Length: 138
Image 1 (tube, rainbow, N blue to C red):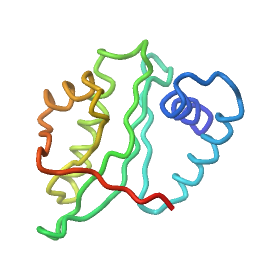
Image 2 (cartoon, rainbow, N blue to C red):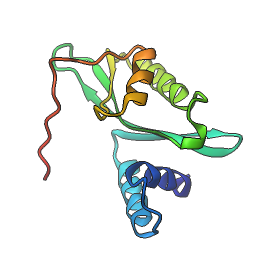
Image 3 (cartoon, rainbow, N blue to C red):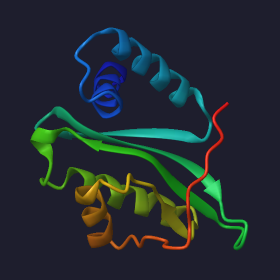
Image 4 (cartoon, rainbow, N blue to C red):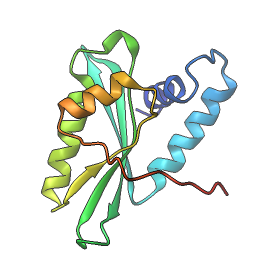
């Protein structure tokens, strides 16, 4: 699974890169991710071929004390888009979250990714207008 998932991660993280150098970086990132006790990666297949992935972690809501399933990355290869791959992965994530008593799924997307935002809203996700994402890179 690692070579297929690394190739998907490479297409997700570096969509315009066709070289092998960044693919090796993605393979190493995937190995680190899979070694984490809180991170998970699912690969979806269509007719036996890798079509997309969903990477997720557990977090917790400080206001409810309940688990939160955070979608860290969701990607479908262009040739498999609009065929239900992302929807199926998100449905599986919702089932996983419910099974662990989580109070929500949480994800982020770029403001210019209208296609993803439409999908998320169709699936019941709601944008939080009064929230902003802050990061401090280390």
